[in-house]
Amino acid sequence: MKLKRISLQALFFVLLMLVFCPVSLCAKRVQTDKMYLFGFAASFKDSVVYMTEIQELHGVWVDTKTRFLLGREHYSSQLKEYLSSARSEPNRVCIVMFATDRKKAERRFIKLRSKYTSPKLKRRYEVRHIGSADFKFQPVTVNEEQQ
Image (cartoon, rainbow, N blue to C red; front, side, top):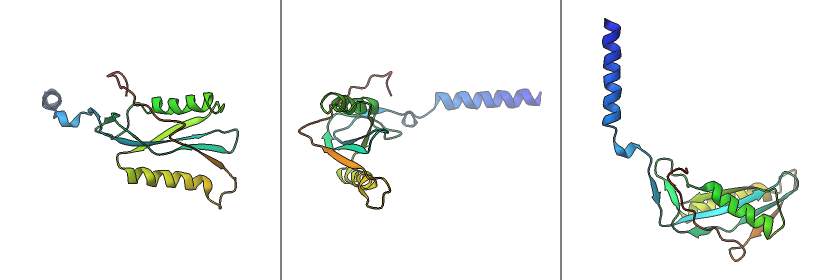
């Protein structure tokens, strides 16, 4: 009898939490005014790495709860396609780093670049910069099904 009472109380509590869950706790997707992005590409076969300039991009989508850029894989694939077609560099692993503040983006850019240009490295890397005139990220539209 006591077990049934506890389980009914627990069930009632869970239902109450689901019904009255504040909307602010749920993640929302919002379009930001601007975001600062830069790309990085490397290969396991050679010591050449590519870095794009920091670019200001308008109309990108962000998850409000995690503050993550939505559609990151699409931005990475834009860089990968550019390297494959324009630079004849297929099979590159591409990532995109982002920040809402220009100074934060610059700090991340400098930190990542210093990891590959430090004289203390045992292996030498050749860092090649991709200018904004050569490559520009394009804003990605995020559907409800995408993350």
